[in-house]
Amino acid sequence: MVKIDDRRIAARLSEIRQRVGGKQAQFIPHPPKEAIDIDMEGLGVESLFNPSGLLIRNGQPVFAYIRDHTNLGPASNLTQRQCKKIHFRVCRTLHDMKQKGRFERYRVTNRKDDRYYIDIRKGWHNTEERQVKLFPCQNCLAESEYHCFNYSMEKSIREKITNQFNAEEALNLLWQQFDIFKREMADARLATLRTGYPQNWSDISKKFRRSRNFTCEKCGVRLNQREAQRCLDVHHKNADKRNNRDDNLTCLCKLCHAKAHLHYHVDSNCRKIIAAARRQQHIML
Image (cartoon, rainbow, N blue to C red; front, side, top):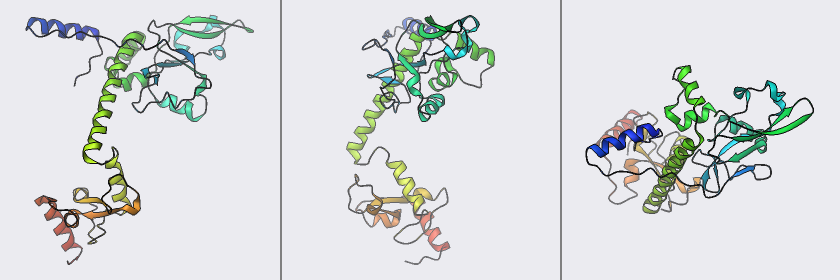
């Protein structure tokens, strides 16, 4: 799947498709379910830090930014580059703010007009509300691949992408990424239903095999070499794949595992690796 986040590229592809007589595809951005422009105070971050890595509020991607700019000095001395940044992914900065308990300083919004309300200092004793254009966080740009942004680019190109950041375009890109994430999650749930294994079974298996020093608990062969680790399985003692407690799991080489299951196939390469390891370790069966 190719992700397109540049309208000029999309227009060019549409032109080529029309020339060759292909069916025209229409780009339809997701309309917002509702206007969001609220402070996070008292709302908590759990509903916002989504597993997709995006900032999601009420089922839709949003930006987060700090409204209070009064600590940056008088408005007359404040430049756009000095203003705080917009975030639209769960980046390192937001993780840090969350750990410090300072995320309530943020406001979340799905505004598309590139104008954000901030509070600034007018003089030394008075404050005022002002609408300004804010720059995006570069970590967020890189993680979202906005206009292919990455830190290996020349500084002048990175600055150009940052300066020309468009909120509506970014939100459409985030909708695409969120849709892809939801489809992948749905596919993973279907795979869980078909196989019975949980979505994170690969991590569970790897962690358990490592805890057993990559050693078969039946014959005692140790298969800790990288190419040999795939010849080691994790077996459910009571056959319930939903019960992944340590006391229900056992580490078995594939040859020992085959004895516990009918029609379990062990490829010839694994047979050779296990047999060679048993001979080297003086394991006689």
